[in-house]
Length: 76
Image 1 (spheres, rainbow, N blue to C red):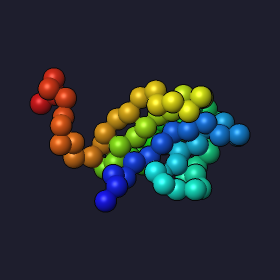
Image 2 (cartoon, one colour; image 1 turned 45 degrees about the vertical axis):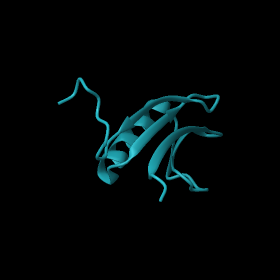
Image 3 (cartoon, rainbow, N blue to C red; image 1 turned 90 degrees about the vertical axis):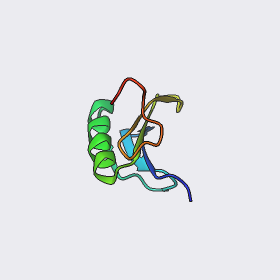
């Protein structure tokens, strides 16, 4: 079973939020910040991971909003 996640990715119209494995985007935004805010809310509600991509498609950042089996050591 693959792990569910959401991705903030560049699109022709700005920035989009897409579920992993989906062909269609969940929503399109004018700015990356708007897409990130929506992606955070969506990922928190679904308890999934959020991947934030750069304009070139590479992953810039990732955040886990689910049950993380390996939480950071500095977070208790």
